[in-house]
Image (tube, rainbow, N blue to C red):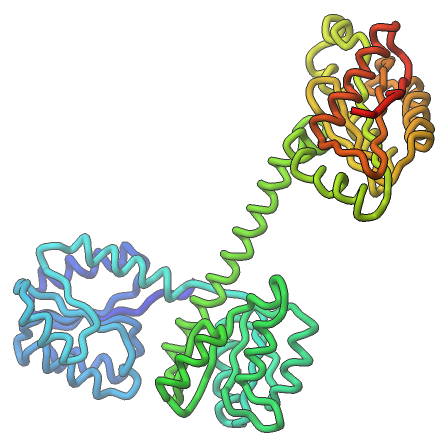
Length: 431
C-alpha cells in the first residue's frame, strides 16, 4: 500500500523526533528539516501530502513559511498544519491567513496523531462505482475523466444531454455529473429534472451539477430540482474528488441500509422455522384479499390446518426432529398453494390459508388435495395427520380476518372433536 509522505519542519531536534515517531507509527514516510529554508527546498523537489511546521522557526516565522509553501504551484491545496505552544485566537487567525489548514498545540500531540490517522485513511481510501458524465467541453471532459478514472471509477462520458439521458435509462449508475449548459436541445437542468421524476432507486442516484456561471439563484434552483452538490468552474481537482467520494459513499451506504432494512422486514414477516409468513404478515397483507371481494366480485376462502396429535410427536421425537417436521411442512405448504394464495404459520402446528377468488367448492377441492398429499408426505420421515376447517366469504358479506378466522377455526375444532384427520367446511356464513 502506498505510504503518505509528510514533511516536518521545526527548530527543535527533540520535537522533530517525537513527531516523526507519531507519524511513522501511523504509516507515514517522514522527512524532517530544522529550518524553513531547508523545508522549502525539500518541498520544491519532493511531493508531500502533509506538511507540519513550527510556529517559530530558526530562520523565519512559521506563517511566512506557510505563505511561501502556498506559493509553490503543487502545494496550493496540500494539507498544511502548524504546531505551536501559543494556543490563542490571534495565533490561529494568523496561521489560517497564511495558508495553514489547521493548528495543533505541541502539548497535545494525541490530537495530532488522531488527525494524521484520519488523513492517512482518507488518502489511502478506495472507491468503486459507475459515473455518468455530461460535458460538452472536450478539454474539461478529458481532465475530469482522468481524475475520475484515477479514483477507480468507471466513466461513461457524453457531450449531449440527450445521449446521457438515453444511457441513464439503461441503469447501473452510482453518480451523475453534468454541466448545466450543454450542446443540443436538452440542457443539463432538463437531465436533472428527468432523473428526479423517475420512481424508486433510479430517481435517487446522486447528481453533481457543474457550471462556469456561479450564480446564487442558479444554484438555489438546481438544489430545488434535486441536485446533491454543486461545483463551479474552473474545477479544483482535490475539491471534486472529495465531493465525488462523499456522494458515492453516501449513496452506497444508503443502498446498503435499504437492503438491510428489506432483509429485516423479510425476517420480521417470516416465521423463522418454516419460512412461511407469520401471523403479523397475515394481518398486514390480508386487507387486500378482503377488499378484492367487493371490488372484483370475487369470493374469498380461508382455511385453517392443524396437525393432529402433535403433542405425541413432541413427546416421542427429539426437539430438533420436531423442528425439522415443521420446517419441511412449511416448505411443502408454500409450494402446493396457488401463486395468488397466502399461507402463514399462525402458531405452533397451526397454519392459515387465504385463498383468493376461491368459491367454496374450489376451496374444498384444493384443501382435500392438500389433506390427501399430506398423509403421504412424511416430513422428516415422520407420519402426520391433519384436520382442516374451511370457510368461504361471498360478495356482499362483511367480514375481516379476525371474524373469518374465528369461523374457520371453530370449524376446525368441530373436525377435531369428531376424531380429526378430515376436512370440514363451515356450512352457514350468515352472521
